[in-house]
Length: 108
Image (cartoon, rainbow, N blue to C red; front, side):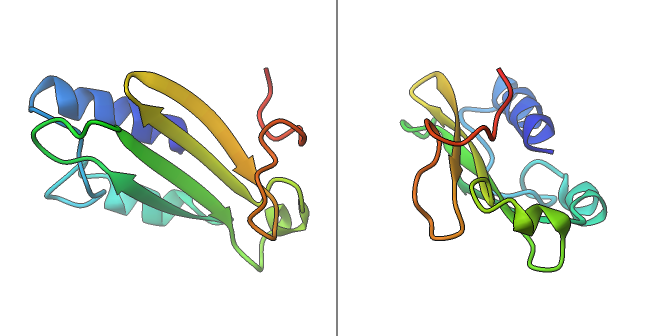
């Protein structure tokens, strides 16, 4: 889902001066898809805006309490961030501590 949002953001930006600020009709028009496909994660987005938001945007998936991903204590939060044309993949544990370099959350 995070990759789908990144791709939708690039399509959005190719037709406008910046990135979308929402998943809904006024943004990426993905809210229905996110609601249906996010059984185990809550998806949120920050940043975006027109003219081009200097820092880009970030999309975060946080494991829901009732899902099996919640038991993955090192990777409960997954994030994709675009910052000044650099796309990075991040993660955090249940306490919110950055586990990007220590946990095996993103395959290489």
